Length: 441
Image (cartoon, rainbow, N blue to C red; front, side, top):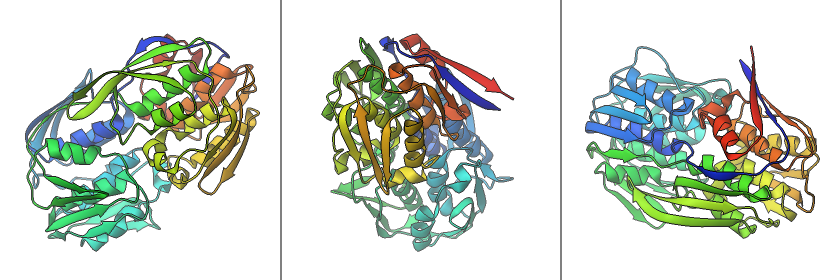
C-alpha cells in the first residue's frame, strides 16, 4: 500500500510534546537483553516497524519477549551462548541498524543464519561490516556486497585491532558485539566520533569497554547481566520539530525527555550555528543516557559551512537540515557526508531533486550539497509534489517544509514513516502542522 502526505501551507508549532523512543537505543536494548543473564525491563521502547523487526528476530532465535505494551518490553535473556538456530531467514525489514549489528552478534554463533530485508535494505552496502568480521574469523556471504547476508557457523572468533575507514556507529557496534564472542581483545578505532550507545549500554549490562581516545576495546567472553533500560525520546525524531519551530514564524515548542547524548547532538549544534533559538532545560540522566527538555522558538537562520566534525554527529538529521538551509539567509555548504548516499535512499540525490522541484537552488556534490537559502522570502518553497522514495526521513522533512510553502505540498511514497516515527502525523497536527495522510491500495 502506498501513502502520501498532503501539507497545507503555513502555520506555526507550539505547545509541548514527546516524540517516540530512540530507535538506536531500542534496537540495542533488545539485542543486549536477549544475550544477558536474567530479565531486562525496557520502558519508552519505540513501537516502530524497525524496532519491532529486531524483537521478532530474537523471538525467532529462541528468546521470550513480552510486549510491547505502551512502550514496555520484557526480555527474558538466554545468556551469551543461549541463542538457538532459527527455523528460517531472519527478516530485518527496512532496519539497516538491525542487520549490521546482527551480523556482528551472529558471526560468532555455532549455528548458521540468513539475514534478509525489504527492497530498500537489499540495496544497502554490507561489505563494510562483512570484511572486518571476516578478519575476525567469521564466514559471511553476501550478494555482491548487499543483502541477503548468509552467516555460516564457526567455532570461535579472534579479536582484532581495526581502524574504521569511515565514521560509522553501526560498523563499530557490529565489531564490538562480535568481540563478545571472540578470543582476546577487540579494538575499534574511529576516524571521527560517532554515537556511543553500544558502549554505554554494554557498560550498563556489566561489560567492561575501555575508551582510549578514538579507540574502544573489549575483552571477549564477558557475560551480560540483565538491566533496566529507560529509552529517551529520539533526537532524530525531535529534529523535525526543532527545524519546524525554527523556521515557522511565531513558533514556541517544548520537546520533552529528549536524548542528548553528546554523540547525537550535532543537529542542535548545527542549528545553533545557523542562529536557532534552542534552550536546553532540566538536564538529567535516564538509564545511563543524558536527557533534557528542549525549548525551541522561531529564529532567523543564516547559511553556514557545516563544520566537518559535526557531520557524523548529525548524519541521520541532514534531510531536515537541508530544509532548514533552504529557509536560511545565504548559502549553506555540507561536505564529508558521503554516508548519506547509502542510507534508505541516496539522500543527497533525493533531497536535491525534491528541493529543486519546490524552487530551491540546490547543487549536489560527491559528499554533500550546496544550498542557496531563500530565508528572505516568507514563502521559501513553491507548491508542488515530491517523492520520498520510501525513505521515512525524506518524507517527514518535506512535510516540515510545508510550514514555509506558498501552497499545498504533496509528499508521495511516504508509507515508511512508521519505521522510525509511528504517529508522526497525529503528533505533528497537534503541534500545528497542517498535515493529512492518504493511503492508496
